[in-house]
Image (tube, rainbow, N blue to C red; front, top):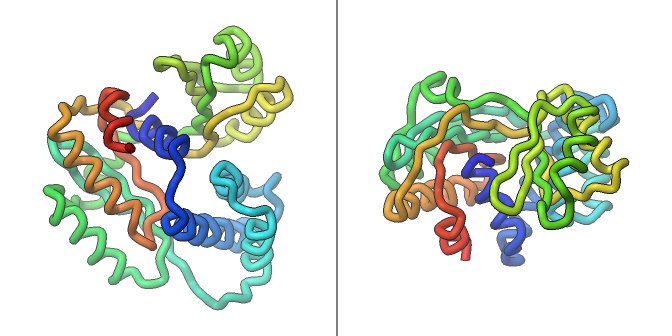
Length: 249
């Protein structure tokens, strides 16, 4: 499993403060609204909307909030025009970082992202500088203490999954974006619960970090994720799980 997927799973397990949860719900709601506006309100026909709703449910966002965000996107009533932008950069030890932004003010977002990189020992890069390190994939994380590899493989591979990889006590099912929904639904039909299911950017190679560089890198990641306009942060770091646990705690 990629380092950032581990980080996201660990933080999800530990939970967030009410203040950060409110900010998270605001970001999730924005993503749902934009996805519904751009691709329609039917999640069965709109994979971006389905992914945004799945993330919201995974974070225990109330159903009425999700439905309200979809209706807002379908009606286009809020009058706010959001733009999706990807920023690329480097963290300590050459870690590749992609920042997925959804903003109504491109200049504000660009300045904030640039400042976060420079203030934490990173560097914003030109478009295309690190994008080649990542590929778009569906990622489904499953607790390996509850299910066996054969059970997961049988459901996932038959439904079109690319791979099932074990990392410690967890399995990660990887799919092509177009197959993500079918694989996720097949796992649900097989009675297999998952801890996390999303369309994400998976690194083709990773950078192993010692604790000192790991702390620096996670400061950049946390600062970026705390920005109101930032929806997702992807990075190709490889940090030991005990260090990630300590940093998340």
